[in-house]
Image 1 (tube, rainbow, N blue to C red):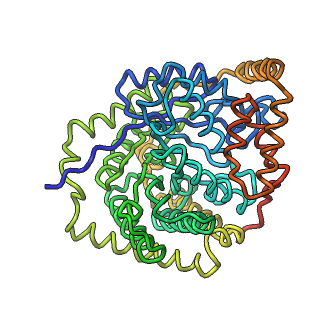
Image 2 (image 1 turned 45 degrees about the vertical axis):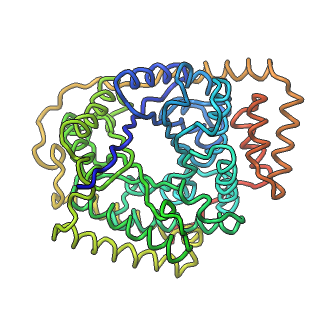
Length: 482
């Protein structure tokens, strides 16, 4: 019997201020989570400071607001960064948040070589499904490959990218589309890194993926199995990877938020348990379980704890990790795996015919395909062909009252005050010099992470650093759909 390694349990708890999020992370650690998942608010994801006019009304709403290294110090205060694994959901400005994390760890006395975690850093899917991009695709890929190179030298245990199909699935992608579009993006990143002069076996072992787990358990298991087959073959045959770790498809899984309902929200506990079960049976290395109230608002402390307890029941009471690939040899799952694999291969070949993932993105291909799939699902739910318990079947005449958790609107004013104090108390001439160095590196071929690190150390803000890059690289303007 081959034993499966237990997955890393992760849970989100960050939103609002760094101080509030810090309290929730400590609570999760006391409750037995093995890793932290950090989501940042929309202004941070878009590279804007909390006092920027475009940030108004969004500060701290869907994640924690981080404007400078001072916020990062508060967020991870009292958390030994050399002993925990942290996953950060951040893409366009991923390098900045990683560098601030490294600087805070160094202040704690922890060398970068000891840090363990993941940055999502998958900007290509932003052009497809989420829209939190900043720079044009080519410049975004430059920042990604600079991060690969930087981490090889400075943060060797860090997973430098988590190529995400999750957000595509949440936007409506089918399992076949989720895998095909994600792996096609992966191919693009590998090509970009090789074109930048890196050896495939130098960076590929730190590449990870991020998928969804739906309630269709057997199909999800087949999806994960097919994805592993395809990625191993691509890395071995197309890119000549020799290191077995370069051929591994290591992936984090999050349960499907899009399948959770505001109606009868307690049913989401059952849905999340089934989704988590499929992820574990499919061999995930890392798992996040959604809270049952996430279809209504930000998760309450009780809901986040129940989501963590769901993982703990799966880990400690089911024996799921007693064997690797428990469905191997099952006629149904093997047939479904072959079917998914064939569908993924066909879709990836179509993307290849357009010139690769970036060229297809610029034509709007992936986005249009996902929108069509989402429309078909919506029609099937409206018609009753697809049953959603509690929504179009087995509904209640009257729903129980539920008081959702809301972010405090005073957060924005507090962040603006913090920024004002930061700017008045720092060496502005030093900051300006570091921002000039960033612009010079962005206009040349030097790795931009080194001047960014020094700017952040001098207390430059996220918005100031991103604006320095905007001045050189510009911003992306989306094209019409395919």
